[in-house]
Image (cartoon, rainbow, N blue to C red):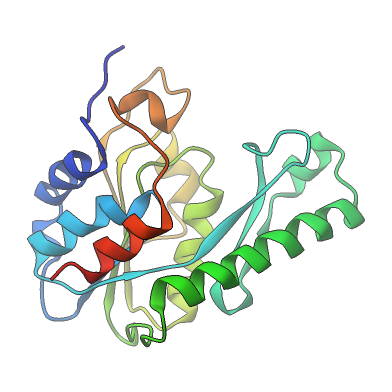
Length: 211
């Protein structure tokens, strides 16, 4: 198996080629921080659409933080995967502790990334939600629900790479699902990038500020 993308910017350019039909005055591109924002920047440029962030946080199992048991987003949106909670034997107290920490981090990032700038109005708009990939789909699902709650009339969920069954998992969450690649031997998003460094808060702000 070899990498498909050089880095997140390259992934964004490849993804943008598949999204040209979604351009227009009523389109807003939303990057999921952190890693989705540098992917979303080339998409926004190609679609001549404004770029904003959509804040969501994965709720990870305390024993295995990368394993999502749910996710939270702006405006109090919350998704809990009951089966994942059962598998990890996570009790209500532990889950509440995880959610409290992630909510605090979500609020911190919200204040830092927007720095007083108003959120772009999604009312009646087409929202193109971009991340650097889909693994479990929990974060993508909550992002779609947040965008719906904020008034988006149409949702496009777009990622460079996802597992083969991602459309089955997320069909109910978005009107369109777009991926550059859906490899059969999918273990993690990062395996398909040559460079997959952690995106910093500064890089997110720089991408948002770029004209």
